[in-house]
Figure 1 (cartoon, each protein chain N blue to C red):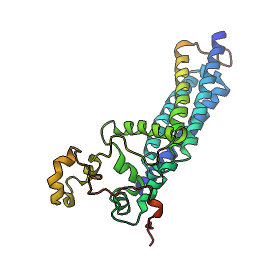
Figure 2 (figure 1 turned 45 degrees about the horizontal axis):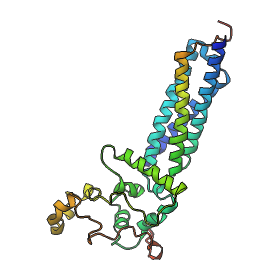
Figure 3 (figure 1 turned 135 degrees about the horizontal axis):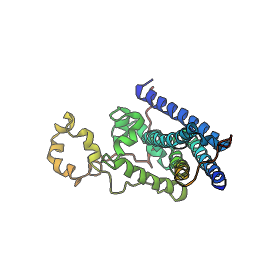
Figure 4 (figure 1 turned 30 degrees about the horizontal axis):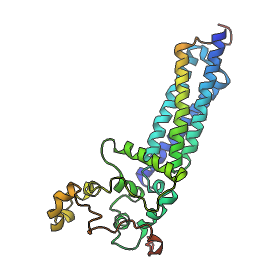
Length: 71
Length: 212
């Protein structure tokens, strides 16, 4: 049960990082400026990449949570 | 509307749709991580938390790299403003203005056309150098006159002019060809084509406007 809960938390962290990174990417696309490039390259890519890595790590190291009907 | 511009707009549109789809999927896993318990949920999670975000990074990089080739991008920094203005100087002896106004280089990528490093790792090298300039612009003190590290290379001119009839039929060019190719003699600082951006004087010069 403990590992299942922690996988849920890990998924939440990965999702949150990806969502924030993608929102930053959309913001960076709104204007053509060197700072937009820097924002995307240093913040957006970092957050999205970290989210993907955390998700992939969760597939390898953590057991799946039980489904809602308990199976 | 030019086809190239339309294609860029379409690609940006596709990228935004992908980003929104990835946000919706990732948000669903944030709200209900238990979705991943079933086989379908696992596949969806892989798509939403790995494939789509990775695709968004890749397409985002392409889009930003393409945007960074635009003259609008280059002259958006305050210290580059006068260099951008120099493209509109109403004087044919100004080499950048002459190239820009006569469309000898694509007008929307005028800076990139003459300043890009066209070697295999050139774009990456240019980007890294560009990042140091962002640092100087926002966290340092930009110099009054911007110098290109290592000087302007003749290869940037010869890339287009070498083999062109007007260039090859000029006896001076032919006589100096070896020195030009080896960069021993500069095209722009050897008394031949030395009127370039001249940013400190731009404010006092007459400007050309397309409608005049």
